[in-house]
Image 1 (cartoon, rainbow, N blue to C red):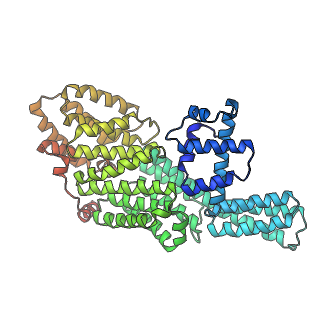
Image 2 (image 1 turned 180 degrees about the horizontal axis):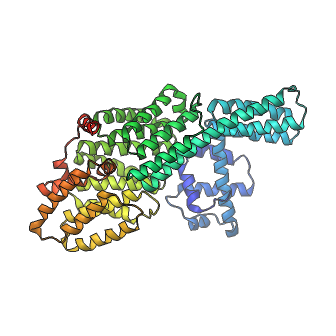
Image 3 (image 1 turned 90 degrees about the vertical axis):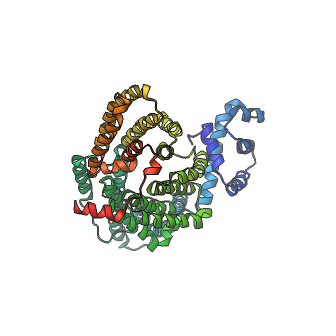
Length: 521
């Protein structure tokens, strides 16, 4: 196994539960030669460490030569993963199916082709149950090989049945791959660029989506295909800023899992992800009532199932639930309460810091920055904005990076750092120039800061009022409306004019009134 770096080995050891460690030690002691004992000694030393330290291990293992060190690390990593495979073969269908395929291959090499065929048929039935057509196709190809080389007494019709089965599964597999590719491409597009920013981008996305849907048979789809299809529609409408339709498909996503509880058991992460988009769409619609209902449902699921979740699922549950809690704070405007919630979030961020991707950390920092700005603590807000700006995220959400830059200017203005505002504006302008696309809101906001920081103090309130009127008009633009959800600069402008905090001027949006206004337009 190519992975032998100390930090990766250390992370793997530290990820093990007590039961997994106990199982590994039993697994490791099945052999008792010198090399085996060396890797087991290394495991015990790493298990006791608080951070990876190769020198400490070498010091504590004087019998091991330095030239052996990398090989023993590599061997340890392989043995840990192998021991985990034994455990998870009983829990994860795909691993169990692959194990049966491996057994069939081994038996075939021993000349026991009928035994091999029997196991392949069993594996095929299991692959059909879980809807894994890629493994199903692999099994069929192995069946074809055996049937073509040996007399299996399966009857003269067997080859015809196999070919027909291959064609059927290949068609299902092609549709499933096409849908999963579409879902992935939509996700990648969003991670890079965010939502559509104008009619041209919307038209391009529609053309892309419709061209990828061509040739798909949407009737009589298997469950995995339906899941991929629903996910694709969720992403499509989300990027298009059509949050009503996004929520409609997110409801179908969650409903599909509720109709088939075994799906929740097999993939709780995907079930929670459905809730995440259901909540995100409701948040974007300012539908506080439905948002609170769905958050309660997700909280209940997490509470009832937390002990049974694996480590990765626990991290995912943290991300979705804690992010949703903060969004509920933003809907209600009770930012002071949000800071209390943040203490728990901060502890979890620290706990999972080595397991979270930069995008997740970025989003939490962004939310926390807004929390502090809203309660009138711009210095604290800047601490987290600076954490964002220090992250190396060249390929990640250019729109959110631009919003972070604007919040950076807002915080400095609240701190009355007027003497350096012009310099800061020029710095942000240079950052914007590096981005491929800047929204109208971002462009107008930067122009506002450029103007206000040069104006005499007595003229600034009128400039703020003029900008507030511009924002009111801009908020009616469906392609700019989403920007106010990420960064409600209009709320900050209002608070500055009135000499209050954002929390003090916040009002809870009326979903029904907003929906009626949207329908009228």
